[in-house]
Length: 394
Image (cartoon, rainbow, N blue to C red; front, top):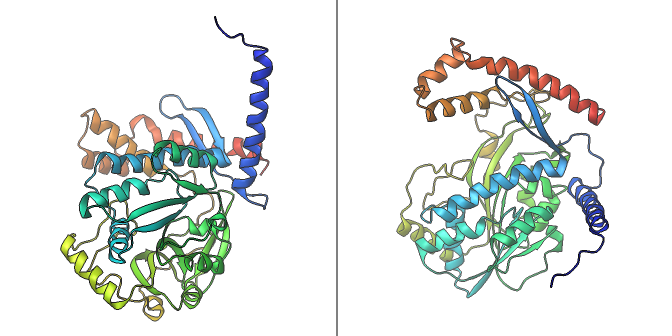
């Protein structure tokens, strides 16, 4: 005996209506209070003998479609390769053991799919079982948060929409952010307030040495934090530079600024705890050379990596290129010829048609132009940009 479906069309319409309402709510939440002038976009199409646009996503859906693939790939790398160690998580794991408590709290800003769990598992494979770890994520995307919990059914992962929603904790708190704080906080003061909630934090963000700038990327606010001001806000912490490079330009930047992309550590470890950390790091014996995998900028794990406090004077004297030209980035979003070249090299390598390095040289020199992909791509990009702008009325 089977149950009868009553009014299946009405049920479907009700679900579709609810889906649209939820999407509208999530879109507004994702973009924030200000009406955006720029929009994230994800194109799915074909280039080659025939050029065709199969699908296009905007805004939150574009962001989530890209990030689901990107962060799931990252997660599976660590899940399928238990010997892979990300240096930031090795540092976190060592310090969690050094402070000698039975339980700690780990807060990840921008948890995405929470590949942090896999990274800590790999650190445990290396160091042995550490203190009990209470996992907390901060993720405004409902879609990514739900997938993160599906991927970690036994973790008791708690995810909050905003950093302000995370309740205070009596446990020692460790925090991590990789390229998320620039979007999550309205200014340098907010970032300082969040960092003061933790005993130990590692963040990889973009900074300006002595000023704060903000603009919008993909319709979301992006803030270059004032590093000098941040240091003054956290004067009772040790602040170490784990790695840094000159920041690439992502929006109009004044030529008199010094912009860096840096991995910084904020901590209040005692001299004795620092000494134990240094000796522990030497026992683990990581390679004393830059580590590139899953870490940008590359990091070199030297024994005194947490001892050296940041020096603004030294940073201000760095021999940076400072190639910041106003309006230099605008209009270059769809110029992905280099990515197409890499794709062509990979495809031809798979089919055994070419020797990759020689092919790349010939491709760039113009000796060969397979199917004239690059010329067609430029034409396609221009026409699609005009079409998309007409839809958005911009």
